[in-house]
Amino acid sequence: MKNRIAVLGVGSAGIQSLCHMLANLDNSWTVVSIYDKNIPNLGIGESTNPSFLTALENGLDFTFIEDAPKLDATVKLGTTYKNWREKDFTNPLIKGSAAIHFNTSKLKDFALPRLKERWGDRFSVIEGHVDNIKNTLISATILINGIEEKFDYVIDCRGFPKEFTSDYVINKRISVNHALVHNIQVPGTQLSTGHRATKDGWMFEIPLTTRQSFGYMFNDEITSVEEAKKNFAEEINVSLENLNDIEYKFKSYYSKRVLDKRILKNGNAAVFFEPMMANSLWLYDQINRVFVEFLKDKLNQDEVNNIFTDCALRVKDMISYNYHGGSNHDTEFWRGIKITRQEKLRNSPYFKTARKEFKEFKETNSWVSYADSTYTGWVFGPYNLMRLDKNFGYNYFTTDKEVPYG
Image 1 (tube, helix red, strand yellow):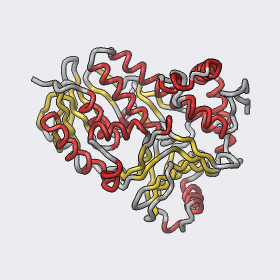
Image 2 (cartoon, one colour):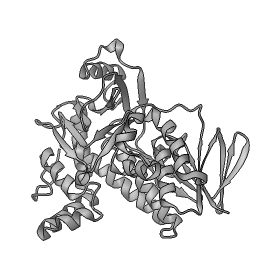
Image 3 (cartoon, one colour):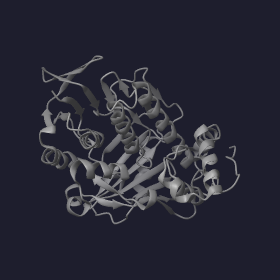
Image 4 (tube, helix red, strand yellow):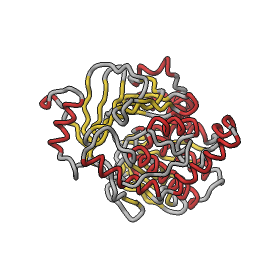
């Protein structure tokens, strides 16, 4: 009898997990997608990274030229920072690779038939509501519309936790915790995701073939929702009364135990900080990678959890790195974020390790081998890190400059 994995949810994390498991496990494994069609998709245009595109290529045989129109997808070659410094700049993706922007509301209907076509009997779908999951040392049993289904493992990608147990670490020093979203029905033309600094925080800009999505990120403990809406409308040149009524409030957190016996948490069930640098999709990919290594008996459960925690903390540091130098706006939000993030960065062991490794890299002039190896210090590789460091005006990786105080 074949081993069975269930993937709960068909959002970005769910489809990414389905693709990764089917492409990286052998024929002794079957993968089942379980989802409730009555649960709506967020339907926001999404920015990705190369690992997400790789998952689609490996799992769906996705080719951009043929398949992009089915997802309203556009090419992403990097992230453009606007109003963070006097001059806007773009941080390219790693080693000249590409990613995509896509319409999340179209992903499920595109992916599930393609998965069935590509993987045949190794893939199947169950539609229904998950009533309960019983997690034991030897199996996981899911109750779906009153019917039990037994699996060897379950990957839970059903979204934000209904409750935050002791397994979760909730970040107390938040940057932003609220988002307003507006879609303009005009095709996007830029080849990068926009990260625009605003007086209240920052705004993402995602170009699709049929529309552009804007997300205004702010801290509602500093800026009221009414004030944020007014500033958002002005930022995108839309009248306040015509602003889309799309609003999300969120926490910043990660799970210390993404793998517990037979259940793996992924997607927003595992981690959410804020949608900067498409960090969530990178973390989802890391979870899938270490889980496959676990299934191949190369890692144990504790190692899986420790590796993910390490990745999550590195991403938190990179977010602090972006924030700690401030922006062109001298406002309450930016004054406060500079102080807290400078303190965070000064005390970061990952930042210190990255600087040490980068110095060794420069001294040996090992560009190719270093760029192709795993960068243990931080999230970005040396090419991207050096460019980002220069454009932000930090120069931590080319000089002995230290993180400022206040």
